[in-house]
Amino acid sequence: MKTLVLSLLASSASVLMAARPAAEIELIKKRVLSERVEVLIPKGFEVMTEQQMDFAYAHASSRPSVVFTNNNLVSLAFNYSDNDADQDMVPVYEATFAKAYHKQYSKTTWFSEGVKEVGNRKIGYLEFMKPEMGHEVYSLVFFTDVQGKLLICTFNCADRQKPEWEPLAKRILNSLHANG
Image (tube, rainbow, N blue to C red; front, side, top):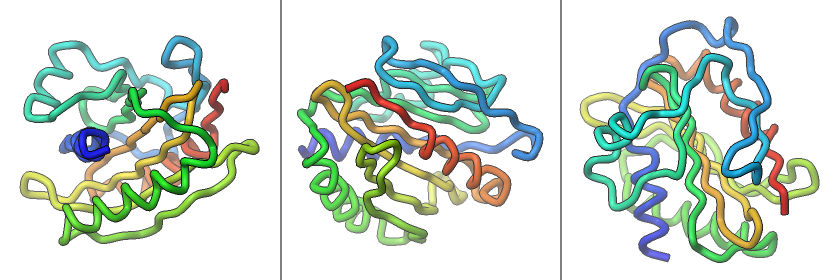
C-alpha cells in the first residue's frame, strides 16, 4: 500500500500550464490500457513519449502506464497498478489516499474528496491545489477497479488554468467507463 501511495503521489508531480481556453477544447472518446477503459480525452492530446516520461517522472518511484498531454502543458495520466481492487475496496482506497495526501501535503488547498457513482461504478476522487516547484498545480485524482486491479487517473494543470480546465477534468472523470 505504501508503494501505491507513493506512486499516486508521484503521478501528480508534473508542473503544467495550459495553452488555450477549455471552451475551445473538444473531448473525444478514447479506449486506453488495452481497451480496458473508455474515457473522454481532450482532442489533440497525444500520448507522452518515452523521453517526455523519463523527464517528467525522473524522480518518481514509479511512473504512470500512459500519459496524454498537450505538449506537457496539461496532462491526464493513467496508472494501472498491480494492487488488487474491487468495488467494495474503492472507499477504502479513497480514505487511505486522502489520509496520505493530507499528511504529505500540509499546504494543499482541498476542494473535494469522496466516492461517487459513475455508470453504476464507484469511483473515488481527490480534488486539490498543491504547491509544486514554485507554483500551484490543480489536480483531480480519480480511481476505480478494472479487472481486479486499481486504476488511478490524474488530471493536472497550472493553478491559473483551473477555471478553464476544472470543468473538463470533471467531465473526464464522469466519462470513465471501465470494462470489468
